[in-house]
Length: 55
Image (cartoon, rainbow, N blue to C red; front, side, top):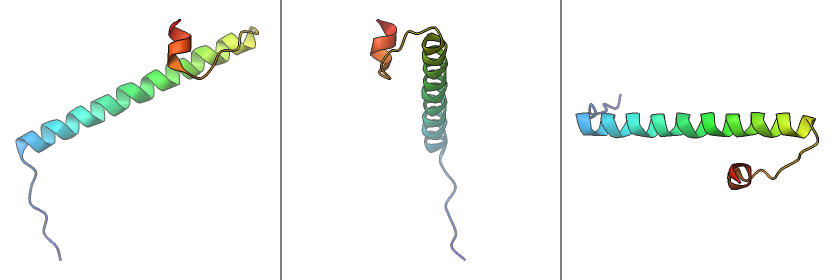
């Protein structure tokens, strides 16, 4: 059996920040796709690039 040393507080904080950032990126992607879908239903097709949506 291999033993794994426990993570330090700093490592846990970094891991939490990475997970939060990944969730924010995922939420943003989901929202952009929803907006693109609604616009496409009304005949306005835009590129998948987020900067195009912002413009």
